[in-house]
Length: 60
Image (cartoon, rainbow, N blue to C red; front, side, top):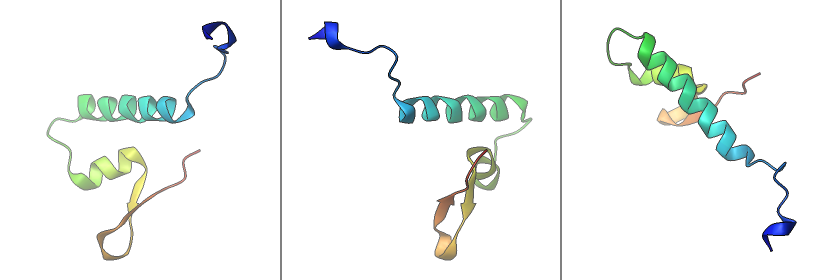
């Protein structure tokens, strides 16, 4: 069964999560203090919505 495995196929969700994690690590490394929730939201591309709900902000 492994012979039918296409190694060119990527898990898009996993790759996106790795990218977000790398961006967060970079922001934490550059900060001189712990990041606030608002700063974390900016790094992750999240914006506050109505009633405290957070929504993903489209990223380029």
